[in-house]
Image 1 (cartoon, rainbow over the protein chains, first blue to last red):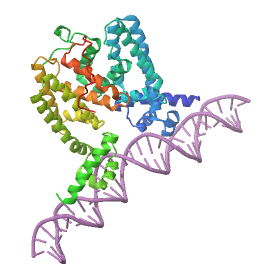
Image 2 (image 1 turned 45 degrees about the horizontal axis):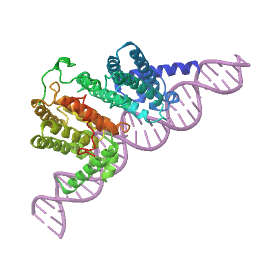
Image 3 (image 1 turned 90 degrees about the vertical axis):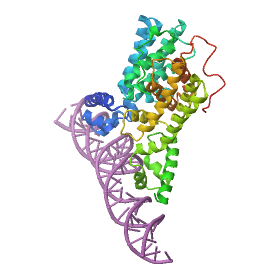
Image 4 (image 1 turned 180 degrees about the vertical axis):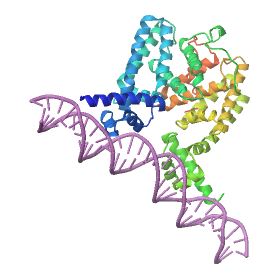
Length: 199
Length: 199
DNA sequence: CCATAAGCGGGGTGACGCTCCGTATATACG
DNA sequence: CGTATATACGGAGCGTCACCCCGCTTATGG
């Protein structure tokens, strides 16, 4: 690869990181090219489709979350590992608003450029879940894809401005359900039991 | 209103119902006008913005769900009423793919045409929740907006082709969590052969 | 230093949401 | 029934989008 091509490639990725963080997965491709100081043709030479660009952008993050799962598996109790991984994964997905749908679509489409990274990430989560299930700490009637679905749904919630502040608490409720913690015990509520706001 | 105007209005709504069901909330406005056999200008005369069209399309459905909540409140036990209403509402939201985000955005924006219907629907759900809470059948640390958030998240799941088949089961898990049913009892799994109303 | 292949970048295409305004027509009134 | 006019119609036009294509530029190996 020629030096100028490499430079443009890197500038495009950096620009995409910035613009996508600001405008979400549907960001204007032109904006990205402009931000990178590169022609549209050049951008499409490096990334023929929007998905190709997202793929390059997300692969590192996905691989990092898979590695993170390995770390947590080695260093924490199975339930704590799962909780921590879920929260961090949701936060990471939220960093690129709207990518979750692409991610989930890619899981069932082997031709997608994102397919490999998605499957790896799901496997990482599934392994954490299996550990917790083996330890009797998580319900047995869900699998790695269900876990993925919950992550997607919660990341979607975090993407809605009106609901973002509640996401953490709602994630806590789902985590409770997955980990079969006793819902009737008011002592272990994840957040302050505040009175309902609306009616 | 002139007779031809009324006819075009009705044809536009019918076309929108069909196209939005097929292509989701981001459907092409041109497609809708074409399907209705009406010029773009005519469409924009009747519905100046996409949101105005969605609003007309959804208002009846929202009002129906609010009314449904009243029925259920009168005819069922609080927990069953809540479960049934949640499932039906998720199914209804799924009928118009992608509208959930608009719906949630409208709740916090009083200037939105959808605002009134959204608030009414949230209130209806909140009332069912309050009944269940008063009967000691639902956890107290959530409110009507949380319920709305869960509906939105589950409707989003139903919109993802790869996850749609799991939506019902995952909804069951969340309902269990809301209703504080005993998660350790393997005998009462939520998805028994006796299926509820939706299809 | 130059030949050449790799890379660059913008003009072109067709579709989008949305606006504007000249034309057609439904309806009220004589 | 005929006509006047308010009302509604509908598409040309604007700016933007994703994406394709190809002539021009430039980095690089000999």
